[in-house]
Image (tube, rainbow, N blue to C red; front, side, top):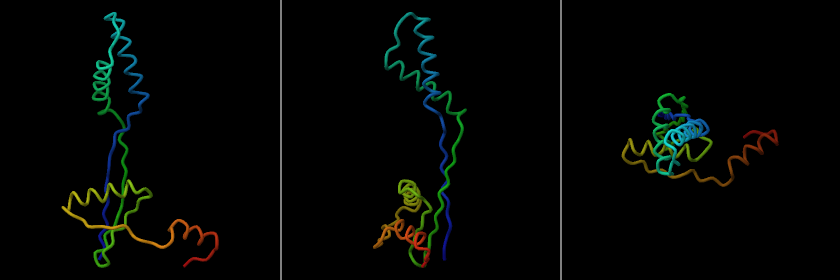
Length: 125
């Protein structure tokens, strides 16, 4: 028996250039209107205000990570090219289930190398 699952992660996309442009404009306006230099801490506070203002308007990027659980054979297969993304899914599963004892698959040869050899040699298993 297998169970297919999907983790959905949404993150706001707010380019640093946009934030910095707004920050420069506000700092310049403040310095001109008050005739003084804006200090570092105040600049940080202004940047926080800008982030709070822009985040609700920012685009949302959605990332889906699929996995399936093969309970009969004791496998969890995560469809992720990076270990970081796989770890995110595993951490969420552990948080949800309470515990999830897992260990990585141990192989004698690198899967990347084996698949490359299949393609180069023209012989599939």
